[in-house]
Amino acid sequence: MSEKHTSSGEFSRRDILKGGLAATVAASGLCAGAGSALAASPEKAKVYFSREISAAALLKLYARIGRNLTGKIAVKLHTGEPGGPYILPRDLVKALMAQIPNGAIVECNVLYPGPRHTTEGHRKTLIENGWTFCPVDILDEDGDVSLPIPGGEQLKEVSVGKHILDYESMLVLTHFKGHPMGGFGGSLKNIAIGCASGAAGKAQLHRQGADLWADGPRFMERMVEGGRAITHRFGPRIAYINVLRAMSVDCDCMGVRAAAPTAPDIGILASTDILAVDKASVDMIHALPEAQRHDLVERIESRGGLRQLEYMKILGMGNDQYELVNV
Image (tube, rainbow, N blue to C red):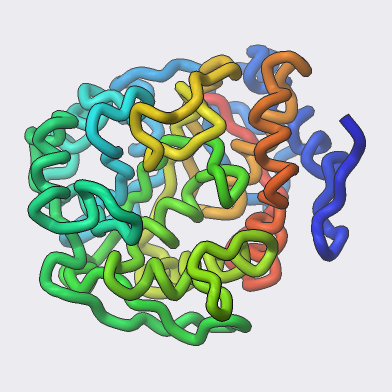
């Protein structure tokens, strides 16, 4: 596969593979032990990694990154379309929510036609998919509110679910996978599209001129700007967990139509830095053997997905240099 540059040339596949080398070392167990860091530097963000995908591992990672999450905590999760086969296992999330007594899973209604287009249909889907063990707040059930986007070039504000104002902190719990428009769906996509209101915000992010479903670099930038509104809203009281399992090239919004995963499960990544955790996730995919990474890498590169990382850096949303810490 030939090296492919993004629109500004700042991130290339070579750049990704540099980070992927560190990920490969950590995933192969070559670190000096649990808690050791690769290429430690005060200028680098910390990304915690567990190869084990279990409730116990998830709780250990949350303990590392959740210290600043206080007050009422929104746990942003993609709860999936009816019967979606690859959404996060409910037992993992149930164990985590048991440790966040002041937390609630939060979602928003969707823009496209389907059961989650309305609050009533959305709640039926939540029951069908097993999200019944803790409160689930549909943020735009009572309308939306506009949040400013510092530094936004295409958008200066975005409409998000009004209930977001009820929360002091946010944990972004993401099933990392591919995406038909974004190339990949990580923490950035989870908060940008996921917190945008179904009636207004999602159209703001998806629309370019008269085209409601415009893709390409401009869509990536609007998506990043939507995420910037959320990170600005919560400041230091937001943290991110990416679960790299059952990674279809398609989003969980595809439900039962999502393509079967061809990449192996990798593990769980956690950080207080959104750019670092999404870049580490992409690095780990690129570090897989060719046959295992091919489909996901093709999806990411064919959609120009690396623009997400590049534009997050431009907007000052995080650090693309990170230390990978085994937990």
